[in-house]
Length: 269
Ligand SMILES: [Zn+2]
Image 1 (tube, rainbow, N blue to C red):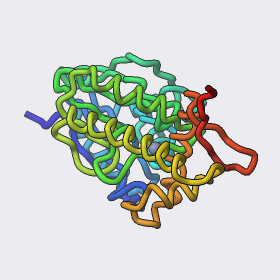
Image 2: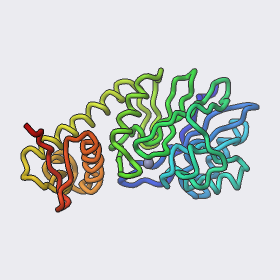
Image 3: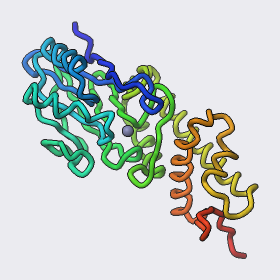
Image 4: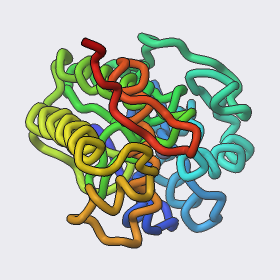
């Protein structure tokens, strides 16, 4: 029997994408093949996708997890080569989409069913795709096999992201296939670890605001908190700290001062 999915690694390695984007092929026989996240307009890479697609009955559709370039840039070329339409949550997120697919949309994949699960937070338009009988989640950028998931406001939102992780915890998932890095065999342990990590970071932001003088800027907070992270990643960490601060601001725990610095909101006696 054929393995339920094939990963084709896109030739786009970088500090943000790790070894590159995992492009997924699923399905077989008369139902044809489904492609998730054709990432690059590169002929050799697209050849490999088309070839594997033919082995799986011919490419019928292209699914996008979200509108970041490293998930969409090969979609138009692949659509032109195969005639397969591009599906995404909405055109606001992915303007090249032929069809918008809401949460819960299902596609036949071999003798299984692939379900779109709306999972915003990393980006407002994010879908994961769950292969139901096999209990395999194609997680896009909600979970990373290497490095960390970056939340960049305003398209990303920490509170929404945490709710997405909690929503995924409620689903019957055995294995996670992220868009970057290796497959994660223990899905539930990974989701729990992600939530714990984010809550720890949030506590660190609050503690840093406690220690630093009022009006601490985001770079100052990163300097204080991210002592365990390569300084080359501090620019990325600034986005995460900003995402945490915006969540805490909404919760009434911190406020932005005139100098672009942040302070704790002290309860009035
Ligand atoms: Zn992304």
